[in-house]
Image (cartoon, rainbow over all chains, first blue to last red; front, side, top):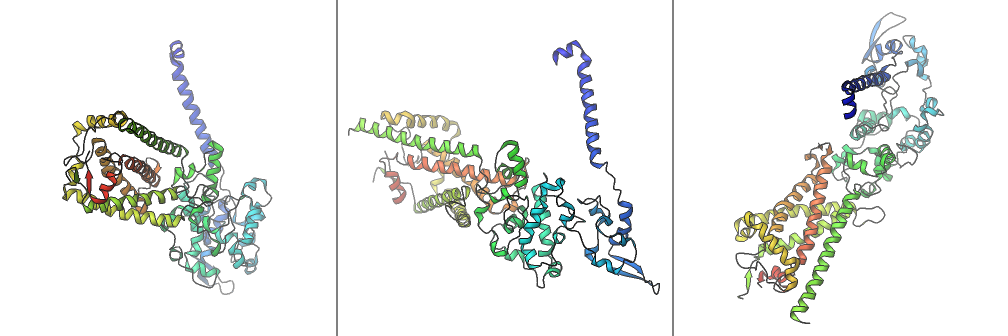
Length: 332
Length: 205
């Protein structure tokens, strides 16, 4: 650089300018590549959101021309702001629902409309292969929710297609992932009304049920319900086999140990990324949280062992030399 | 009785032995937690946590007894250091342990009513009792009540920093314990210092 500067003093400033211009266009093109896709569905969808965004709607009786206002059921309310940030944001409502919904008031027979399942769109599609929807569907068959509430429980019971976003397969803050995923469970398990929509009894008090768990609040904030309540899966990033209560993990060492369960569940995505980068296991937990027993730093272990061996051997050598010196000065 | 000094009153002996027992239990349960394994459980994890927490809390009360005792009794004066002189004195004592003791040299700082500890001993006791143990207690309280720990500091989890501090200081206290026991054999006889901590009287050289 020094030689270049001496030969051509304007070269370095030129290079810097070129670099800045290049960086600007690179950043501009990157920023724009993410937002260039337009919401072409907005105009059509706005007809639906006109009513389904609100708490109530008005309908005109075809016989008497009387206009009445009705409550919109909570399950039928869709927040368009949330929808346009969800995974399915580019879809038109009628991509999944019948276009007959454009007729208003809706035809009563539409309530018998078949609702698509995840596999209907995602099954067999190489683009979604990494999500392994087939295995998720298989897991779901053994899911306690599926077994106990067969007819009413579906993918949509937890993953509202109008709001769902991918959280686990990202580099998002783990606490955000935990909060999002736990909220999926809590929307029924901590909500008496929603719980009763699925089963005819009151929801149990989760705090009381988990009173055996030390530092309960810390656990609830830092790990997901599914860490203990699902069967560990080797093929899925997020196991969908929710087990019966009696099978839930209760042994602390499942997580608080070298082969921490968390590495195969909550930190699975990050640990895979980490291993592919530098092969340093469990450091991902160490960087983001602290789990006693699971966090063992190789170098700290080695240093502490070295100090320990040095101290023990130092004491033994010193003691032997003392004995030798004692014999020399005091005789045998 | 002329070559014996009553250094260890009952309160001090009770504190010392209870503290020793607690530290041992804390080391064992701490190691058990840190190296917990599903395949070969040392102590059940939840039991290790419970014992560790209880012993830690009792140790805090013991520490308060030690500090209070040192304030209201004359024992505290033995921990006072002259910062100008201590460096040179430590060096002299270190040389004695390094080779003087093997040559039959006389003890450079013999025990007397004004000097309970040699300079090296005093320095490490002060470091452990007035810096190490308080750090262990503060970080230990933080781990029992993690809601009071800052969530992140310098881009790192506050819980991680607190745990690292607790484990590192705990490790050095464990190392100190081994050295402490060995150097207790440097009394008038190999066992005299141990006896002194039971009957209160320390034999002088």
